Image (tube, rainbow over all chains, first blue to last red; front, side, top):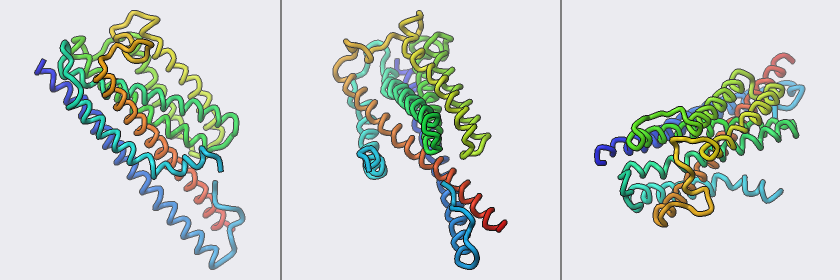
Length: 60
Length: 236
């Protein structure tokens, strides 16, 4: 049964590597979205400070 | 503010440390504390990932099902964000259940894959969830009509879960009968305890990931709203 340790290792590796990659991708997406949201909020704030306010509110 | 809302606000304070402690306990339990199974040997330790991953898949699909009903009932896109979050986590854990089951199956059954009812119905659920995510990805996050159609699809697709759960009872399968989800659990106490700890840890991880994914989806919806506001501002 010792030869089966490879399967045990592979199973744990799939789980942890999969979870790690998933979290990395999610973190990258959150970072990209947060930056874009921040940029657009700044742009709207600037526009409101200098000119007429937008006709309606900003999203949900 | 309701108790559920107060609890949801605490998600980033409570969930990460609890999940961390649970995962650490799961690792120690599965690799060190749990006894070596006499017939299968050490490869049986895959059970401490495989079974909790299947439970996590069921939990994610239950959230997808409930959130999809709320999308149709309340017509509130915040529920669509929760549904998409749950579907993404469901894909992850159904993938883990299939992969670890396959790696456990090879040394014990002699094959990685068998087209039996339990394995095939789980693969079908995995594909249903991928199709749901694809359908939601090709439409805008704030497209309400697409969200409603996808909710109907998700509710129908979720019906695969009872089929997966009952498959080993209704058909003759290579996959064994349940050993824990029954009135007289078939595991020795120490193995049962480690499995319980692993299940709690992975379910906490699932809840945390669903919350994280839901917040990400809502951030995407907010971004679309902001883009629309900027466009309107520039047109004015």
